[in-house]
Length: 209
Image (tube, rainbow, N blue to C red; front, side):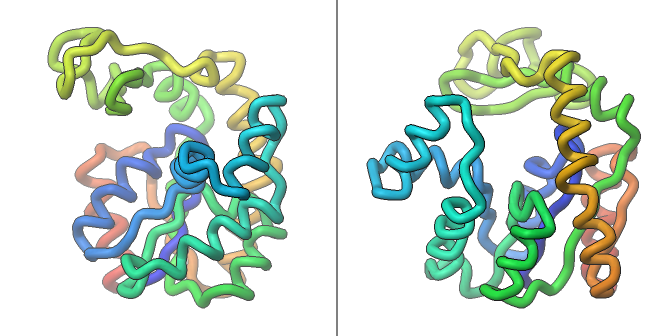
C-alpha cells in the first residue's frame, strides 16, 4: 500500500502516520526527517540542503524529489509506504506520479481555528524528539518529557503568528492537492476534529473499503 497524507500543520499527520505504519507494516517517509538525516550523514544532497536551510530558504522541488526518489528504493518500502510532508504542491505531485503509482491519498480536514489552537498547544522534547499537545496528548507531568525527563519546549514556528502563516501557506500551496487527487478518484477525506483513536479508525475504514 502506497499512501500520501495531506493536512494543515497540526492536523495530526505524524501521529496518524505512526499508527498506520504499525497497522499495515509499511514504511513511514517524512521528508523533514529525511532532510535532517541527509544533513547529519553529510551526503551530497544533505550538504546542499544544509546550506539552503541555514540561509532560511526552502529546499527546492528538485532536491526534495531526488531525496524521495532515493528513499522509496529502499528495502523497507517494498511492502509500501506513507509519505508525510510530500508532495506539498501539485508540481511535486506530478513528479511523484512519474516515480510511483499511489493507492490512496488521505486528507485530514479540520477548520483553521482548530489547527491554530492545536499548533500553539504543541510541545516538543529537545533531547529525544517526543511530541506532546496540551489539549489532547499532554505530558504526565506538565512541561516534562515522559520518555527522558527533559524540559519540554515549543517550536519557534508554533506561535500564533507563525501558525497563521503556516496555515495560509498550506491553503495556498497544498490545498490544491485535494482537488488534484480527488479527480483521480483516490482521495479519502476524514474529519480531523475527532479524537486520535476515532481518526485512526476512520482512516483505516476508508483505506480498507
